[in-house]
Length: 68
Image (cartoon, rainbow, N blue to C red; front, top):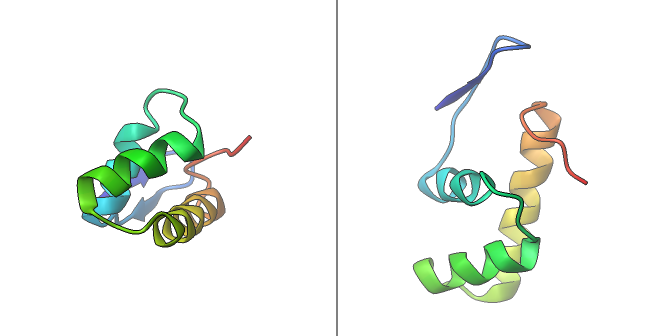
């Protein structure tokens, strides 16, 4: 669980979402993050990329993340 203090909204994260958030602490490419997640969770690259893209859209919608 995290909170967007600026907007006063709570955002729930799954275990995978929390891991993506950890990996985003330092600027990383999507490819790097997917490689790490595939290694850690034994998930197919195309599934990982789709889930990660959905996470980024969700976090952007909640104004918790600004994507470049």
